[in-house]
Length: 259
Image (cartoon, rainbow, N blue to C red):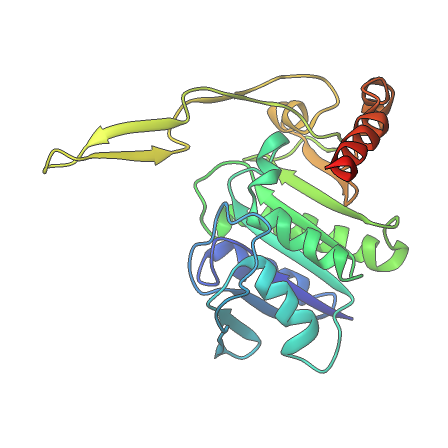
């Protein structure tokens, strides 16, 4: 089995090295990851400039692009063989609740799923982010990878895994939780009197609701959340049907024809 490993923290971080080493015990591993920090890159893709991939050591390719770029190159461009699994991580910090919409780590697993390759993202909730502290997460990743390779995943589904710091009490299958955002923009003044801003600098909380990823990790459990590509909110259809959008559209088209 060929396993593609990527992340959004960059190829030189300890988490990806520990992950690749542990996954190498169950299959052949290639690493294709950004050449520098790409956290919060989301599902962005480089379309207006060329990409470069440098093999910095055997099986490790540094790409001057996003995690999504790395998955595309790893599946379609760099190798003649298609991987059977993509694992993204181990991220420095949790990817929980609404944070997954920003996460390059999660976006890499999403991109792999779009390309038809099973995938999961894995994150360590808090530091210190040393190689030793990534060990438990890497061991769980290897166990989960074996299960995914053996059983497969439901259609259009990938997994988002979060590991609590320290020794986990177990594993829970969870749903996506809800973040509580404070003042996330911090304003300051530089030595020349000009304003500047830091995004994401405020205090962040979460709704500690049972069954969610936040609740599981807070209780010292590994959280495994199945995510899927279809973002449609099916529960909203009844409410939006009452808007009579089709009637409004037909009226606008009629007015346009009369003009």
